[in-house]
Structure formats: structure tokens, C-alpha cells
Image (cartoon, rainbow, N blue to C red; front, side, top):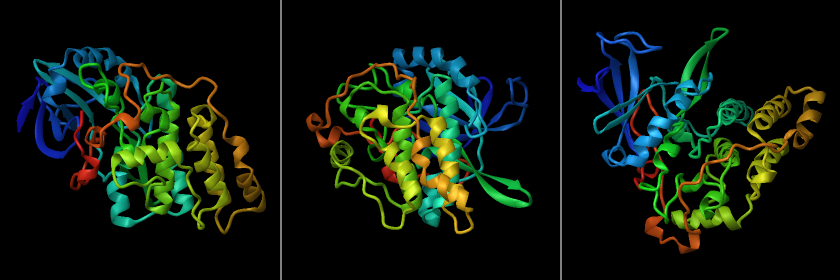
Length: 350
């Protein structure tokens, strides 16, 4: 093991992303860390040296400390500490011993409409909590959802945990994000992000719609031969409903994927609507539950006060972006087991 700062030891690498490397680590036996016990296993994301050397990122890191530490929710990976020592920047998080959702999909295939709706309802719960605390994730994708296992009534169930909160805010500084770049992953990026327009929490709801479509079909709704082509599809194409998708679920997805962010539901409304859909699309659903699911559109209320994203960079429209400059994935979360995501999830641009 080797030390990271004065409180932690790094054990083994769990994965590498565009902004840093995630390690399995441990709290040193001779120190006290609030919320942890000596010897506790943790996940430590060590940010890239280029980020650590950027004064804008360091200042943002320090400013975000209290916000990230107080962000707690049953469906959010808890940040326990932020390490700033010398030229080292690291986030210390709870260690989740489970795969990420992207890896799970590749290994097991799509979810049923009911299972996909219930899982995404929990992710929407996490988004609602973060938006209420003033944090917009901005890189919502299956690779940033970790799957822990819980036992409920004697049965093992997957418990989704959203990770990498704050990474987009830390990396999106004038010294890091240039005028031709944005923070995010092309397959999940909202139209306003691709065009460099002002962003709000509606970008996370858009990402949730992409994820929900992918969970139940096994693919994303917007395809292209290059990252640039995918971005242009987000801007110009309308998603198409698969013939096997239940109408109530499509209503939810279509509303999340509206080009106009003001027409998308808030995360709280989304979570409620998904649970209504899950109760009403199964073969054993009651007539009342079916009727409520068919009327789900009335539940998808726009957020009256969406959380704004502070503007630190002004990307060019996709048409002006050379294909080589279009960014790929933003970052990995703290994964507990298994191999790192595929290269398409780890394109380094920041």
C-alpha cells in the first residue's frame, strides 16, 4: 500500500476515467476521519495531475467541499472527504462492492419495463435530492450508477447508487474546459449542453430519459457513426417509440427527451411517475393502476424552479466542432468489483 495524503492508503486500482483513477483504499489506523473508522475500506478517486495543477480546479475543489460532504441520500454514493495536499486532489467515497449499471447491462441485457422503471425511479430520487441541494450532476449515464446488493424480505435486490457528483463542476473551469469542449458524454448529453446554451437540472432529466430508454431496449435512442453525429442527432432527431414499449413508459421517456428543457419534468415528478408506470404495466396490475399509468402524462410536471448550472465556459455549436475535439466520457465512479468500463466509457478529453 502507498499513502495518499496523511489519512489514507491506496491498495489496488479499480478503474481509470477521464478525470482520474479510482482506487480501493483504507483509512489509516492512526488517524480520525469523521464518519469513518480506522481501517475502514473506502474508494478514493485521485484526480489527474493536470487538474490538480490548475488553480481554478483547486479553488473550486475547496469551495465545493462542504456542499459535497453534506450531500447524503440512500441512492447517492457518499463522499466522506476531499483531500488537498501538495499537488494531490482526491475524493474519498464509500466503497460499493458491485458493478456499475453499464457493465451489468452488457452482461445481462435489458431490464423489463417494470424493473427499469423502478430502478430509474430511485435514480430520480437521487437527482431530486441533489437538485434541492443546488447540485446538477451533468454526466448522468449507466457507468455512473453503481449497483449494490441488499436483502429485502429474504430476497436479494439491486440497490442503485449514483456517483461522481461534483466531478463535472470541479473539472468545468476556464483552465480545463476550453471553448470547443463541454462536460458530458455524447450519447447522454442534452441539446442545450451540446449547443453551449445555459444549463439547468433539466440536463439530468434528459440524461435520465436516455438511460431509461437504454435500460429497457439495450440501446440509446440516438445513434451515429461518430460523437459529432450523435450530438447532431440529439439536436435534430425525435426519438422513436419501439413497438414493444408500453405506452405509459414511452410517455415518460418522450417527456424527458423534449428538446425544450422547460417542457421536461422535474426529478421529483419523474420519480413519482415512474412508480405509477411500474404499478400499472404488469400483467397483474389492477384496472385502477392501469388507468393511472395511462394518464401518467398529467404527473410529469415541469420543475418550476430548476437548479441552474454556473457558467464557466462557452462551447461552440456542434457544427463548428471538429470531430476530434468532441469529448467522450467524463469520469468513472467508485466501482467495487469487476473490470473497468470499455474504452467508449473512458475517452479522455478533459
